[in-house]
Each structure stands twice: as structure tokens, then as C-alpha cells.
Amino acid sequence: MSSPRPNIKCVVTFGTSLTARGGWQPALAHALEEIYGHRVEVSIIAKSGEDSRWGLANVGRVIAAKPDVVLIEFAVNDASLLHLISKNQSRRNTAAIVTRIREKVPAARIFLMSMSPAWGYRSWVRPFLNSYYDQQKELAHDLGIG
Image (tube, rainbow, N blue to C red; front, top):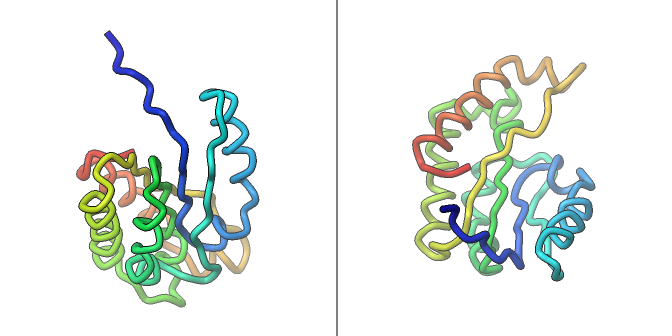
């Protein structure tokens, strides 16, 4: 027997410019509204050029929204040589973000996102991007989230 589908009314997208300026949230809201048959608010809490340190400092904004779903996307900038965030620090920051959300909004479903590959200059400053993305998958598995 399958479990009942959760009633999603609020989704928070939390991340970098890929979240802040990606333009994908309206399509997500529309798809969820088609599935659930009611309005689904998809909020953006993101800042271009930021990383998981910014996410950790701003996780209270996510918690204040009392979301049903949180989509977290910081690995692309954590992987940038311009940010100097090690994979270990990226993992600790992201795990702390998830822990804080879980403590305050325990029913929220949380997903770590690896948005896209990088090309040109963006790939040159992110030579280890795939390893950060692989770590996101491992962390999601370890934390029991999506």
C-alpha cells in the first residue's frame, strides 16, 4: 500500500544565481498546481554569487516560511576556486542547513540540488564541480533526504 501524497502548499528554493535568476520556479509552481489542484507558492530565497556559508547565515529565512518542501542548491558556488570552500566544509555547511530546517520544520521534505554543468570560464574556476555534486548525492543519502 502506498503512503498518501503530501499536501504541498509552500516550496522554498534556496541557493545561488541558478536559483535566484534561473526562472524555473514558475514552471515548478504550475506543475505542482496541476498535480495538487490548488495554488502552490514557490518562493525564492537566493543570492547570486553566494555559497553555503551564506545559506547557513540565511537559513532562518527558509524556516520562517514554514515550507512543505525545501530545494537547496549551493554546491556550484562551493566548488568555485573563487570561494575557497573545501568539500568537507561544504558538506558541514549543507548538513547544518538541513539540520536547522529539520529542527524547526520537521515535516518539511528537503532536497539537495545539483543544477547544471558549467562551461567556459565558469568551468575553469570549478575544476572539481563533479566531485562536489557527487558529495551532494552522498550527503542526501546519509541524511535520508532527496
